[in-house]
Image (tube, rainbow, N blue to C red; front, side):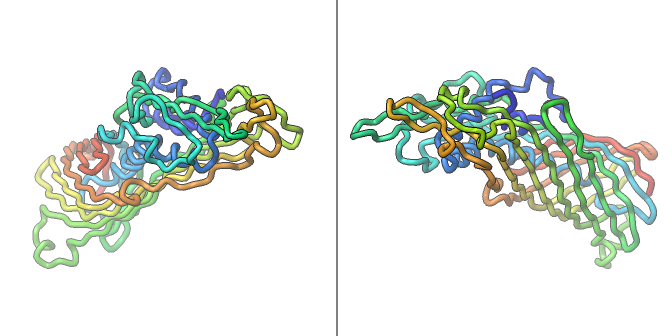
Length: 366
């Protein structure tokens, strides 16, 4: 399997986010083997294995939206580049596959805990053995070791955005990366929209304090990528008895992450420095779609694994992964911005289940 689910998922880190190519983690090619146990088990394993990445990546997409509560006057604007780094908690670096509710005809060997995508790359992993009952005898249909971790405990992501002031103390914010092809790996793109509105103008006491600003903001970011896959019966040591009806060449993986955040922001301005604080929520949802034909083995009369037209699966995976706690988490952000004429440099820290460190710079005309 030359191009895998993991390549699509990690494409962001490898190409956009400054992670060197030696972090592409070719060992994750084993990810495709999870389909050999059936669609239901594959979805459960994929969710447990990938959830630290989807949660962390969603947290990075929700960062960098603001560095002040003060909106621009019309027609002021700013262009800001931020780099957001989400920190994956230790408890998200492993999972127990026996607690996933997999089908009954599976045995687990090796350690009880196995790494998630954020876990160690050199730790022992759980092995899964699927078997069928043939005339009262248990015969192995498929067996594989769950994928390795990457050893990466953080997820970086840049955001480039434009904020434009419109009347009534409001900013409209946009993020955009046009869909581009990256070699033979696939296509990717990103867009986001947000709005920030001044609450200060509606509160008489605060409106009299020129150095203090209070606003509310909301933003949504969508990242998506499409890549080709190549997973065949030979990758699972099974004979290929399929006919022309089945075409292994049309395999594609579509992966999208949508992240929403809403916050109340307060900031205080003194010459050359702005301090800001935000209280809000995080929400992340990930969609994973595998289209095309994929091999799933069955046992023949000689109890040997083979793939037939009937056992092969077409468009097997299409499901959503909600973030932790149903996708909603509280968040607190504190930061500081240094103002050097039109050039601004900011740093902040967001405390949440997946905390984020942000640094950035931009130009602003108010």
